[in-house]
Length: 299
Image (tube, rainbow, N blue to C red):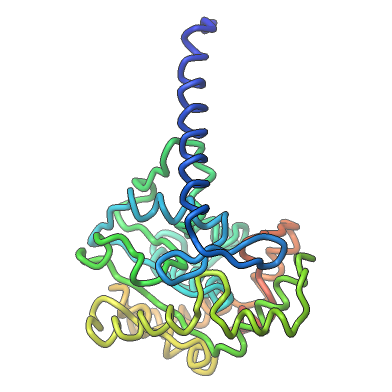
């Protein structure tokens, strides 16, 4: 059955008008914020933290429309802190009864950022507002959002937060390699270092970001698990079991005897992630898997 032009064009026109309005509102907001030239574009300072023009719309929608559920799990990091690895580990742990570690596991053919949605980058939804009702009864989500900017429902609900921090020197080096890999470096190493030390980086200052969640983990240890990247790489099995306990899906003695811990660590190792990246020939301009970002822990 054909659709008349009048019936199909009206919604499209309304969507277009709304998108134009939202774009104008975004521009109006950005025009009021301090900004800093950064890698060919600008970062904008909002509530004490720096965000890109790509982050700002998603952050605003996240804060305005997201309603946390008691069963939610949020993976939170600063960029270049092991986000990809932690997403993969959490996904494998929480879904191991649905997806046994075999040749059909989603992590063997999909990027962890596809399986664990990052809330500042909600598209592709192609809707007026992001649809946060996605996924099943227990949602596993990711964000770089600082604690002070989280929607109130996150801290007021029973949802859990897993935060991963990393040595700040390694974060900086990973940032520098990342920008070079994308061919977007317009500043010298010295200028980039100076900006980073002033707190100018995506979702930075890094130290304020980390400190907020560290304090929250002390105040609410049952809600916020604070992990250290270096400790996880040194004792991956111990930390994986600790993560499973916090997520409410502990690894049983039978599973441990059967080698489930080593299987998950192997599935989420750098070799697997890198091979997936090569096969799919993906070049994610927001999140790129680097050799230093995902440890190689194989069974």
